[in-house]
Image (cartoon, rainbow, N blue to C red; front, side, top):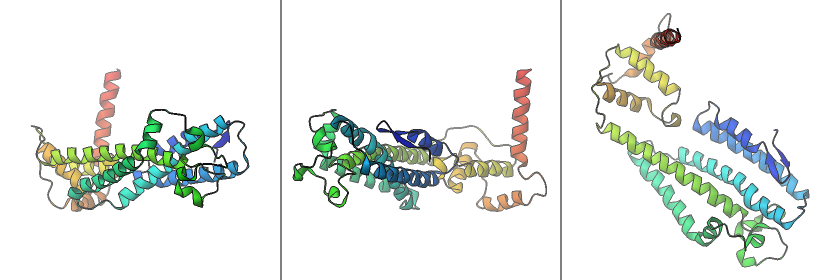
Length: 279
């Protein structure tokens, strides 16, 4: 772990996070790796905070208002992503309701904490010392109940609440994108593809292409089902691939030589085109 705590900030945290996000793993694996990564960072923070003394109250406020909440927010966000995927209905028609239920819960959180959210969104600072410092004597009525079970050296009354606000904003945007993706998929399914294109190569060639795209996880972050992808291609290119494309894929795997014959042909054709254009 090369992330270090220096000058009241985490050095290389965002860089290491981006390396995980840009990896070839699917959405679930990325979320798991990020959770493990951030939990390790928070362990480092715990050890650091137990012994660190901020030079000024402003530095302490900056840490608990700007730095720590943004790290914890990402942990909350990716744990919520895993929960969403784990509880996602198999029936695609029920997925929008599944996502909308979570949006309702987020909106309820917003309503419950609207005054604090208003304080944050307006960039107010008059309560910062109360919310984001660890002064020994505070108004007990303003303390978040979670603080009771935590070491007072590690948190303030509102830094975790701020992390939740940040996380749920990210989550709401993520869910809205998911709902849009489902609605667009439904639009395609409902014969809204206006195309005169016909697939004139072999059916098995298209099946080879479909499997390659599915295994590359290029649709819906790898969550799209092979049958759904097949249905879209059938509609787009006006071709019936039959009910058992799995049987056709077994035939592809059983080829003695050149198993990815069509994909190899596509690559060779494109490379020839590129070479000709360069000459």
